[in-house]
Length: 101
Image (cartoon, rainbow, N blue to C red; front, side, top):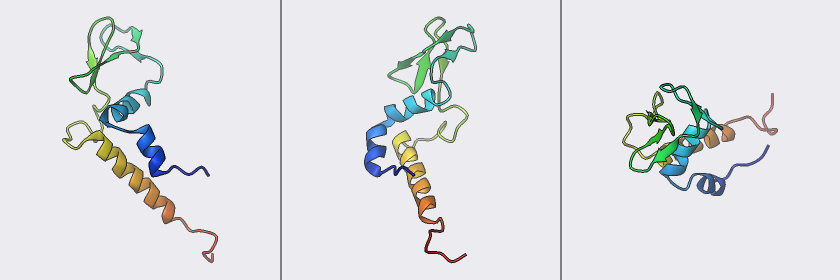
């Protein structure tokens, strides 16, 4: 099992923008099929909002829509950090070889 450390976490998610980019790339690693013009495009980030814009028609999508992050005022990095801590805690609660079965 490969260890994922806090150093790895901070390298992968240095800020909210990197977290938002991950939210977009997880379901759409290559291109997004625009629900309005139905063309596959990369969509580009609008820096003043947490949305991405279709290259053809300008329709905006939010990677946070439909998630626990959607209406939250908590920064994405803090959400991601909480999830990281929760998954780390689960690792520590697994029985190890020292536990008698």
